[in-house]
Image (cartoon, rainbow, N blue to C red; front, side):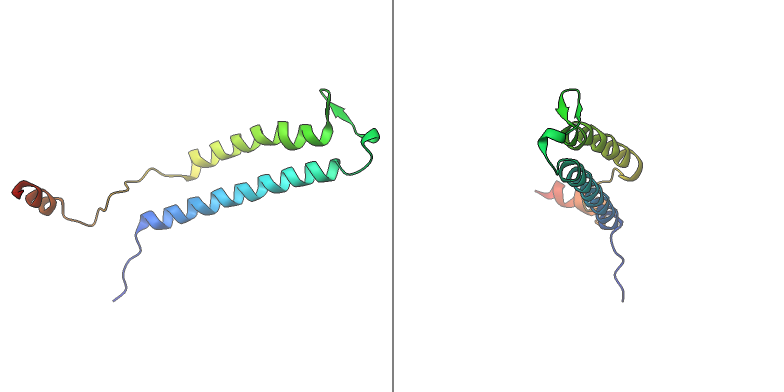
Length: 100
């Protein structure tokens, strides 16, 4: 007899995959901005608002951007769910609690 998987675990696994995927994208963004634009002679750097371009895009732009992406993903894909065990019959739990 096959045991049905709890839907909460399936949803939690999806949410974990989303979180890891977004973190991987953020890391790639940061890495390519920092090491792609920051590679070379510092005398040749371009500046944005007085900061080196590589730093501005990797740290100043990247963090708020990933924060907005995470906010959107949480609003769209994450679901509120109960964490208590819903397989128990609540009347049995109440009856046991009343005997003590």
